[in-house]
Image (cartoon, rainbow, N blue to C red; front, side, top):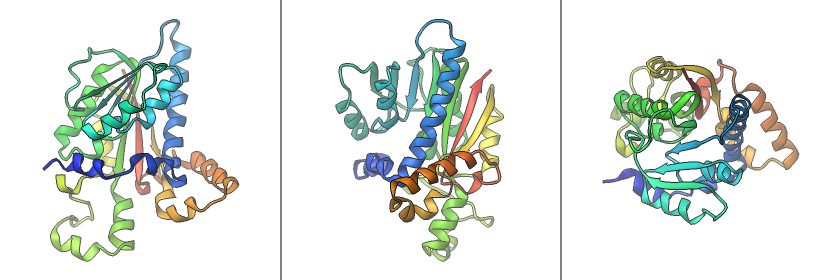
Length: 266
């Protein structure tokens, strides 16, 4: 069974990112994308920056960057998401949307892209070998000095929210879905892989990169989603301001729902 195809065919990813609580992750990610694209522009004397998004989903990031005038290659695994992405492309956008796998980017030469976004595939790769392979491919196609942005789902947020707050702790301990040290043990039918900070760092250390930042893209937002969605515009603006001021605090990273590892290729 293709669990990913079935899941995304019945899930409103665009709707998630357009809610106020979902916007926190999007705003944070785009803030850092723009920061490092501006850095790249300052260092490049000529030529246009090229962007690759691996696991582009329905195109929330790829389309936004293409609208800003960047040439974008968008690779997506599932046919359903790819169809939605392609339906939103306009003539003015320089975007190529193709079906492909994060584990094999052989269609692209090494040292090609200024920014490689891997904002979804690592949610669904269940072995350290596959996770490392996806990162190696992303780094390979990035140019020297270019950036790879890799997103992860974090373990402790699931333990705190799903296991304890939602009351699944007894059944998941009994079924073996939680290890003795409370690590979520995912299988393909569970869809999402949960990571801890030390596991992300272990992957990063095997790559020819320098970490420029490890960012909590939604921070505490997931714990108070209904409250954030109900905020008036002024209060929500203050919430985003607070979040952006604290999202790089490493003492808070482990508790975020999603994290973003920002890597620069040597």
